[in-house]
Every structure is written in structure tokens, then in C-alpha cells.
Length: 236
Image (tube, rainbow, N blue to C red; front, top):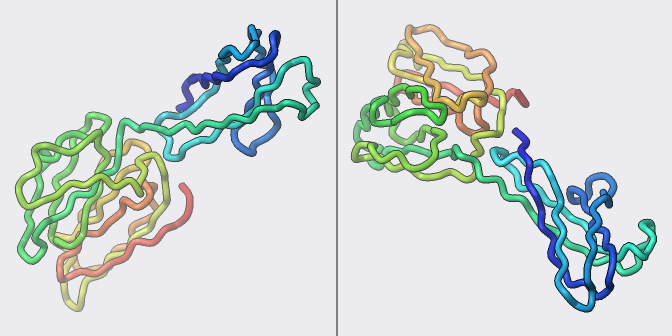
């Protein structure tokens, strides 16, 4: 959600009088030159404030650029333009973390809902059953979960953004005469940022319809009796 923010531009003014402070998002559109500030000049510091809209829960930094110019020069003139730039770095309240079994050669077991704590929106997470100890499961959380049992690590994953969405499909097949019981699909819902668990049963292949997840968060926890794949289906 876009929220109001400001950019403060401090500069040394050599000329007394009005200075225009022009700005735009880097390389996007024309400069906005409606900000004027009256400076005392003589090498004194002058300051201007620019009102902008930003999304603190977004995934990508946003660059802003502009220039300072004494208003005695025409706006269309490039004379005495002093460039400036700055970058807004979002700081989402909810960040992506991976949970991994530290000893995949032994059964890792189940992390219960109580041990996992709540989703970012306050709802209860499902249990995670690490039937395949080599596969991490991802959650969105404000920080490290303190109540994880021994045998697991939780690491922030800066390459995954809890506010970036992608659509996926999944296919799960039994191996030979095997069954799908015990195998599950985990992903972070892109709208609610809740951890979602989809369990599979029976001995018939399952095609999971397209679902919208946090990009990079969809994983399969498969028993030795099942195989499967997750495929990107483009934007949500």
C-alpha cells in the first residue's frame, strides 16, 4: 500500500533567492519542478522537502533523481543544474525465512503449529512434516521463531520477498504401486502470507490447479513412494 513520505534535499546555495528543486523516479517521465525554496545564498545551506508516495511493504528499492537550479534561470534551461539522487529502501514487516532439517539422514519429524507460532496476519500455521529432510519449507515472519525444536535451522532468505507473487501448478505421482499418503505441498499464500499445506492421499496421480504463492516459496515434501514437480505458470 502506498504511503506518504518525504525526500529532504540539502544543498549549498551560492545565489540569494528562489531555487527550484526538480525530481522524478529515476528515468521515468518528466521532471516535476513545482518545489521552490527561498535561499539566503552566500554559500549557506538551503533545504527543500519533496512529498512522494512509497510502498514500505514492497520488494524493490525505488530510485529518485532530480536537480537543483536557481530560479533566475528558465526552467527549460540546463544552466547551473546541480543533480541529486536518492534511493528508497523498503523495510517489509514480514520477511521470508527457510526452515531446514539439520540432519536429513535421520527422520526429522514434525514441527507443530504451536512451535511454529502465528502467521504474519495472526492466524495459526499448519504443522510441517519433514518427510524429506533435504527440502526446506518457507514461512513469512517478522523474525526468527524462538520455539523451534532442536534439529532445525531457520535462516532469512533475502532472495524471496513476501510481497512478490507467482502462479504455480503441481503434479504428484505415486512411484510404482506406491501411495501418496504422507506427501504434502507447502507454499506461502501471496495475498495473506499464510503458510498453506496441501496433503495428498491414495494411489492416483494428482494435478494441483494453478495457485498464487509468494515467488519461490512452493515446495513438495515427498515420501519415497511419491514423486512430483512444481512448475511456474506465470504472473498471478
